[in-house]
Image 1: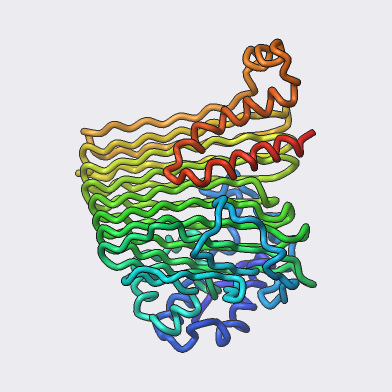
Image 2: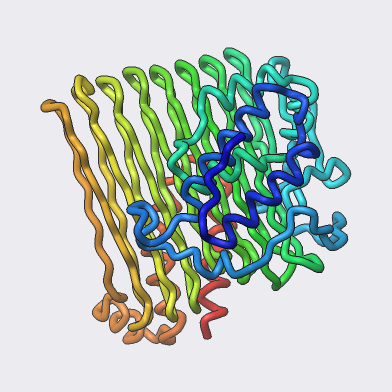
Length: 443
């Protein structure tokens, strides 16, 4: 393997560690996986960590991440059932996988009897028991090699979850994934890889919760691949509430067959720096996706939501709505690109990002894009950023509502549109409680 090592010291350090860890990574005896890992390391070696001159990273500066000397071998602090947070879904889940610093913890997990044709296992176990399935999923949905963080994940991926549904299989209850980040003697880094393969006319809901049980730094670099065959429906709800010193970078890809539906909702309120990037390919007529998100940032937090939707076939549609609230010196980023490829007639694509600034020093960077190469389409995009409505605030205060309570009501109303639009009703109350708590912590 020949790698062009960049001058950046942090990038060189990761490549050096890859050479050391490569023989010990899961699936080291699988030739196809060795090729994937080597290709990931080589791609990362060509660029290193992206800088502000990289167009898709121009608003997100990774300088603070590169300053931390993360360890892939750091031992996490002890975690038991009593220390785990309450279920984000708001009720007991019969199917819950728990990961601590990226490693699967079967002693903390609970996997109920799933219907025939449904398989839910850790990524490490899937490599040992069903390597052909993992190969199929990874080879069919490999992230763009131009994304350095996804390439880094390909080199180091070690654990995560794999959900496989055969044709016609439906999961009635949500699958909950709890990812816990903890401190260690040296700041830990982990690269999780998740894979969801939904067969024809299958159904599943996945609730993913990332939470920090420490106040120190760690780095979660995650890639999730979704493959939806004809008529499949997958709902994915993710809540990111990492430690305030943590770094959370997630790259997701989704490929949709005919009449498949993919609903994604991302709620971000933790982490010093977080980025949710999602690439969706609508590959056959009738494929639809909804990409929604909400974020609450304060202090010097940074949150980046980046979306790319490719309409590759006629009669496909997408809806995107992201709303954020920024306080202090927080910085929000939204980059969204919808591309309508030639012959993708009758495409319907709508995209909107709105931000509410509660401080003069808060900042929002928006870059919505449309690239249209077909003539029979309905596409629109927009972005707004502003302060709380003074008239609405005056109205509430004139009726005896204290100022901070009035501000909280307006913030909840602002985010209510995107939260109420979720198909997963059981998530609304927990998220509304998060909003109320966030507003209370501002005081």
